[in-house]
Length: 268
Image (cartoon, rainbow, N blue to C red; front, side, top):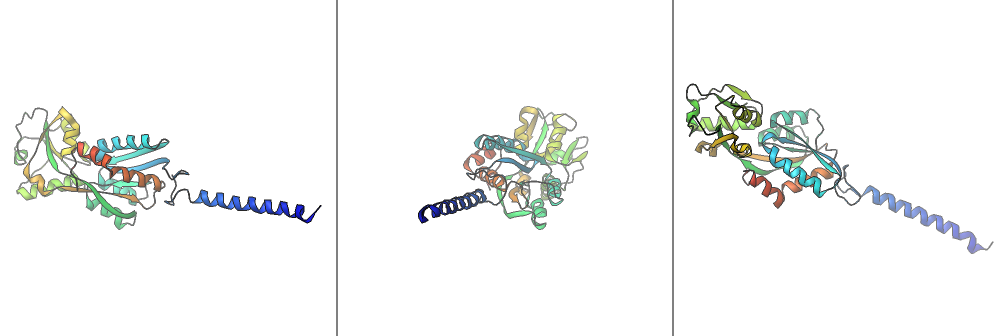
């Protein structure tokens, strides 16, 4: 055997070893976000868990379907509810990738606990509206009308953004209102009117719109004093960081703004 023939296998093995190192490095860098859920192309995969205010249910459900269609193999799992309860769940360790709150105050609960990745950004705004029974048989035309004796009115609990905004509107108008019940999220308040268990409720204009002809919407000027900003953020312990980033990108895209605008949300 010649000297040349003895060296050939060493060069071949060295080449194979270098190729293996390059392949391993490429695999490690396939998800630039550093989180799980990214495919070899950097596209999101797997499940994205989104905690979102109840008033976002219809629009976010639509965007979730768009996301899953755009990224085959993904799934968006939503947890809709009162923003305060969702924030408490996140700070308590509930697994989630994205949090969309109906107020900066409830978002602050998450950021103060160090559970946000980056700074929350306001993506929409919302204002209050009265949801009266279909056809408005009680002829409600103002916030003051809700104080009439015998009228069964439901409000959101003051710990949730809808309730806090209602309190601000009532204070701005100098009115006092004692509801028949306080509900833990805006959808629960709306449902009371839809089921005719209450004569009216103070909810968001987006919820009135989503209810269609099940309720009658009544605008009132004091709502301008209590417009809520909705912040959204990727969470620090997100198990699917790349999926979370892609979902936030969709929400803030022109397509996302179109869906949210059609639902009645205001631009920031």
